[in-house]
Length: 418
Image (tube, rainbow, N blue to C red; front, side):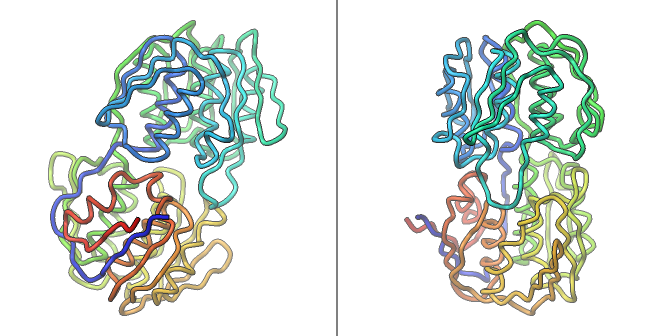
């Protein structure tokens, strides 16, 4: 397995470009299954989860052509409306093809999601919503099977809890259903709004995406379209924290500042100097030790759970005690024991981490447990004294494009060991 070798203590300086959003590109690729005509997507990040989704589309029967961040999907023929375990076992987004396949072909067989072991990701919300749309659902042997041979019918759907992939999946299923579907307590994430914009370009009639109530008027068919994916707000936030934690001077380019406002507000309170650098860019500087500032993860527009681990690495050297509360996933503190190996003082009480800031961290051999934990350990290692070795960085390859190359270009002493 690949490892990262990092020698800490080097302030980052320069520009860090943000790639397209992985969490937006995945549902966009799934949406290509809804039409027989070609769909062209730009700014697709070249990461492992995207490659897995492209393999899945090919398995189902679509023709996929990928070149330099532009992907063309031609799903004229869908031979196998199935997402087998062998293809999707490393990716939690497999459920995103359930709605499109059921909507277009009337049947789907999808392996239960895999991916990071950060907590329960119940698919029951997807299943219940699809049943309300008229699909017959059976779950057995690790698979969800849906049948709607007479087509789907519109329904009023209320999610008991906010679910991003559930909202996206149902939205894709409903675009070809008869009548107008209304989703209440829908996810408001930018990725949901981006998917709706793509679907509308394909001929769908969706209103309210980005709010808690989404209305989808079903149409008979969709057509081809061209669309550019939004910037990855989690990568942008990770880069801002990287600049702050190394006491550097970094400009994060190609981002949408509005998408990461919950983070930048907290970083400002902790002592980072963040300013608008113009043309979708933010500049961060932090020459002093940060002040301990509490956070609680929430659905958008709250503080993103996918930035919690990276923020905790910064708080590990803050002045004072910070309380970090995780409300989205129950197992998202697995990185804390690895940070402790580097000298962090963290105590876990249920869904809350109590972080007593230390003057410094020291390099160590550590193990990445999931995608965002990988990033948190890289950030900690870049700030720590001495050398660190981070194992299992394949987690990072699932969601960050050329991560170590981008950081090395602005001064990080980071090397991938094969």
